[in-house]
Image: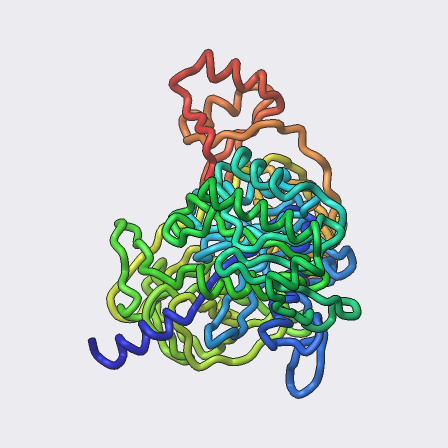
Length: 525
């Protein structure tokens, strides 16, 4: 093994690239900010050290997110902890998540699932978990908000296993009931960690290691109950097993409160100690590309207007192999053209800093990379192509029009940008109707699209709900027949896929029954 190979392998081993998934209001954004606090990236929660001054840089950087207090778009955060480089891919937390979420999870090596102790598994959690399972992502579970009244944690363990077929293996267990949280028992060594609140949760929560005899005397029945439950968990074999975690069969579970910083350090340590480092990625042919091979990376996200003052466009690239060097010239796989990487940045929310090198697992932001598209592979040396990143199946539809014809050019430019980012899918009529139709999985996506078109591209729009209730992928032959059929319409997606939209699921079922030879595929990804 030469020096370059050893260097790349060593740096890759220090990387952890992970996403956080949750239902709205489970505490994902709060946990994200507390990770920055415990890593030293911030002195107080929300205040980032940058250019010698303290500046606000929440993971929710978009104006609409800050107005509503929700996560709408994914964010990339890179920070250091315990000698490792952590790349946190923060996914949208609103229930109407979009294609952006699918793409971000395609770039992660693991995920943290955040559950509200009072609510447990919810619909958004299930949907995001299925995306993780499809990508074989190992999942760490964090039961949050234990400082508030909630459900019996044993009940939550059963719910996790029953509803998403993932066996939780508690690593820490609470001392005290929900709402009366004293601390946790670390089941790996039996240590009791007692927490003390800080004002507003702005600084790290003091942690005190308490001897078992003292804990029994001071915590009384709460301590006894915690030990009895831990013994029960031992008997049923619900203990940490790293191989089964990494295979996706079990999930190490931690208990705490992100708001008060209780248990945050345990979860962050789990990312370093348990989550897998980057591994060789399979190419289009199913062959693994060595981490030490020449540089390669895949574009998984495009984001416009992160810097409103400059109306920029950033392509986020997951480094899959080799060493990236700023300024290197690479090949864009989809076109075969050379691409210069002069403007390469590392990202902490909306804050950027120029980087000189990156390694497998890292995410590089290429600024004003106008020719790059989602799924593009960049490489140096031997050519490589990675599997395409799937699109979502839209469930809601709306027609969109620019209010002013004088802003039509801005309107079209904005739609192209939002389509490419995955905010919505923009569908057009191949027969000549110039009114685009937007496809989404939730109403919130339409609101985001309208807001961004108006505020970022200067094109106010009117949205009208479209009457379609079902969608199928089709081909040209079937599309020709459907154009004469009532209650249906054929539109084309950006990638050229033909989608058949139907006003009634019953009518669709009738068509499928009467015309078994027609191409009406349920999967539209």
